[in-house]
Image (cartoon, rainbow, N blue to C red; front, side, top):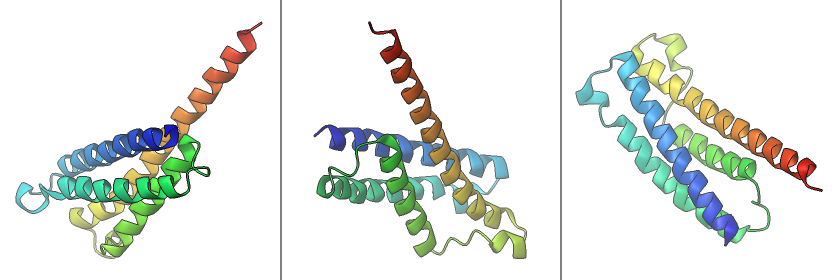
Length: 137
């Protein structure tokens, strides 16, 4: 049960981070709200589906998903798979330089940023736990 609750928390936080970073990217690129205003909400819907798929995977393979990194990798693999099957081409910007194509490329970059954020949180947590263990008599 601990793994399922931990994975649910990680999936929700990662979903919200993807949503927020996509929202900031759309505002940064000054994309029109009519065409791209709902893009971040579409990402949130995709992430909700990813959360459901990830939770089922964690429940089935409960013993394998016992760390934050493994759960974050699972989320990012499913997220990148969803980006690929949705037709999001990260290399399109290099052939046709438009802000719309840059958004597609940056969505892959956001995925890397969110994963690295969780990786560093995990390293900080491990460092914190190891320092507490050293102080115990």
